[in-house]
Length: 87
Image (tube, rainbow, N blue to C red; front, side):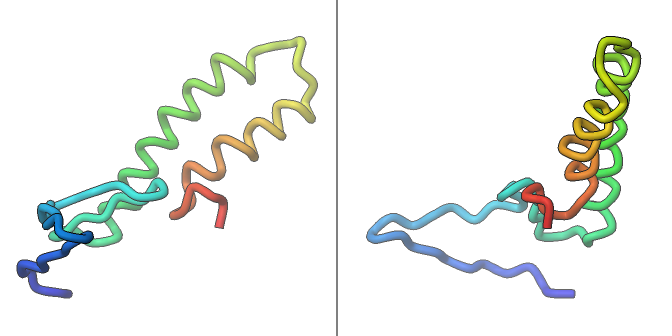
């Protein structure tokens, strides 16, 4: 585990403030937490998505099973992965 320390960063002449956490490409970077915390956060977010998909997609009779599966694969599965781009 890395120790927290100041890491001054400049872009041209501007000094950027140091923060304890930031989100980039769907991944939450936190200075004092482990990846386990991020996994828990994603599982929680996926639960919300699952509930929303159930009421908005699964219960709709006008959608085919193939369409429902495609929506599931495009929305739910990426919400569980560590990168939102599907990798």
